Structures are given as structure tokens and as C-alpha cells.
Length: 522
Image (tube, rainbow, N blue to C red; front, side, top):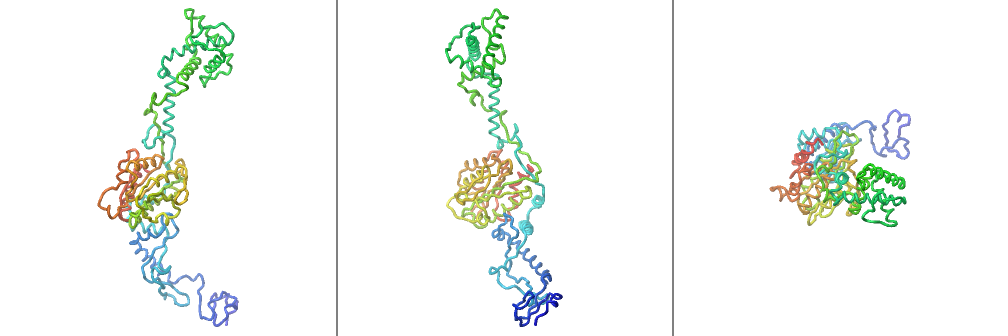
């Protein structure tokens, strides 16, 4: 027997006893069974119990934060984090089987079905992470800040650290100074400069007169020219001052002959006029002689006019509140076999805090994930990024070079065929964070050269975390750390360093790395 449509409209429960489900016009329940399905908005009577169950599991999960970090993609900020639960029954209310308040235990054992996980939001996970690691209040306050800042090149300055030196602008400043010295003291760069200028002037006036078929104003010069050489010489003198070009050669020569005649008429004791009788003419004569004597080399060489402190120009970096600011963070992970186990968990937690911090400072954060053993690997996903691969030796130069090329011009990794970039410094604030056990066999000098190159690119800041392994726990800095300690002072001020052996060490290590950056209010 089935109820009519009119009855079912009043009561949204549908009861079927021995009926053919296909013949029912209402939404069918299981045929041939006495079953009552609750209305969709009736809610779960075990809701409060399930909430308490989730809270219990979340508290227990704080002691397993390392396992959670190792098994979940957290840096890419997913929507949910899956946390394995203890093997206790989760209250589940089965409609039609249980009365109100009589929910039964869920089936299955942990590790066998989806019932072994609970899901928490990303915000809940962050709270658990901070509490589990005992994040210092100072760091909590930092992460709570919402101010967005940006560091960008804003012109050049004559003062600044050597790491920020702008080589192009410095070279231009030296050229301008050398050019000014040449213009004001050309005699310092040409032997018997005044005598040669006077000889060139007399030759110019003589041939300027001869070209007009007039009687020469000045005596015939010591050196003589014939035919096309005369016109070539006259034109070269007239074009020696590019700031005051002669547009009417015939008119200029006629004026000059008259000017010299007037001078000689006023100075009867003179047989020739000096080349300095007219400022514009003087500049042309000196420009011609300088270029001719130095074989066209207009600017004094670096040996003659070396770089001076007054030439130095530095990129001026300003910090401003910028709601549209962007940051690129390059995460570089040592994926050699020695990093397996706890070191990789420590590195992942370190990267997570670094990225989380930058997300509080910049509106847009782009993450470049690079790992290395003896080669460089660029990854799209965290699962690939943190995959461990054993390798005989470990070098980091390929990874640093890849990040540098990605930031400057964009690049594709040969090993993974993944592309990224570019992130020009004029538009992006750029950071690098490297996690390694310190066993890098690139050579101390090479390590220092590459970190200097990264900082002067420029990158805003670079952090180095040395993940302490079981055999290096009692010692000090390893190969890479010792190399970075020897960085020049102007580079080292933009580099933070720390060591960490366990998850509990990560917050203090991050604080130690960031302290220098915080002092500059970055």
C-alpha cells in the first residue's frame, strides 16, 4: 500500500511496504523493506558528539604535527588538511537503524578506509601548527600584522652598500667625468696640445682662404695638403663640435677670414692670430686635434681616468606600503639522501613559515620550488618537490643558477621541463630560502660568489637553514655554513643563517634568520 500524492504533500516521509519501487511516483525508498528516511533538513542528531570527537582528535594531532606536515601539501595553501585519527570509533548516525541519541560506531580500522582521517581548514591547521611548535609571541604578532609592504628600486644614489652598486650608472658617471676632464684639460692627454692646435688653426685659416681663391690671410702652414685633402680637412674641423654644427660651410669660412683680418688689423705687431680668438672656433680646433692625435678616442681610457669614489652609484631601495605589491620566493631544497627523515620535515616546516610570513606582507606571493642533488629540479607540486632521491654528491650551484635565471629572464629546467618566471626586480620583491644539511661540495669561494650574485641581482633577502643530521648534531656549521660566514659585510647584511635539528627548533631558527630583516623593517 502506498500513500496518495495528496497525503505525501502533507507528510514528506514516504513509506513503502512490499510495493514495486518503480511504480512509486514519490522519491523511492528501498523497496520491500520497512525504512524511514529523514527529511533533508532534519540535521544530524550526533552533531555535537561529532564536534567533540573532532576536537579530541585535533588535540591529539598536535603531537603528530611532523607526520601531518610530511604527508600533506601545506605550502601551496590547500583548502583542507587531512589528519590521521586514532583507532577509536567515530559516532555515526544511521537513518532507519538508530533512534535519536543512539548513534553507533563507524566500521573499519585506521589505515583501511577513509574513516581514518579528519579534515581541518587551513586556518585551523595554522593554529594547530603554531601551538604545537610553541611559536614565540613575537612571531605570532608578526603573522597577525596585515600591513603590506614593498621594496623596489627607486632611482640611484651616490651612497649605499657595495652590494647595491649599479655598475651601469657607475660606468656612465665615470664617462661623464672623463669627458669633462678632456674638455677642460685636453692638454693632459695630448703632448704639445696647444702647439698642435695653433698649427691646425693656421692651416684651417690658410686653406679656408685658398678655397675661396683669395689671398691667404696667414702664411702657408708647415704641412701642406693638395686636392681632396683640403676639403676633407676643412670639413673635419667644422664638424669637430657636434653641439654647434656648421650648416653653411662657405659662409662660415668667409666670416672666419674676415674675423682674422680684423684681428690682425687691430694687432699690427702680430703676424698670425691665436686659435683662441673665438670660443666656438677654439672648441672646434681642440676637438679636431684631440680626436686626430688620439686616433678618434674621444673619452680618456680607464688607465688615464680611473674610477673614483665620486663615480659610484647605488640602487636606492625604498620600502612603502603597497596594497598591490608582489613577492617571489624561491625555495631551494637539498634532496640528497642525507636529508631523508627528520631533516626533510624540518625543511618543510621552515619553508612553510617563510611563505606564510611573506603572505602577511605581500598581496601576491609566487612560489618557485627547486630541489637539487648533483643537478637542479624545478617542480610544480609539493609532492614532487619533497620527493627524496639519493645521490653521491651534492652541489647547489645549478639550483642557484636556475633561480637566478628564473628571476631575471625566466627559464625552463632541463630535468623536469617545467618553466617559471621572469620576476623582474622593478615589479617583484625577491627572496630566496635554502634548506640543506650543509654538505655542499661546490667550494667555499664558489658558494660566496653565488650568494653575492643573488643578493646583488637584487634579491631583498636570503635565508639559509642548516638541517642538522644525526652525525652532525654535535658540531658547528658545515661546509656551506662556514662559507657563508665569510661573505663580505655588504652582502652578509642581507643574509640570515640558522641551524635546526628538530621541529621544535624551527621557530627560533626562523626568528634568528629573520632578525636582520626585521631590523630593517622589511
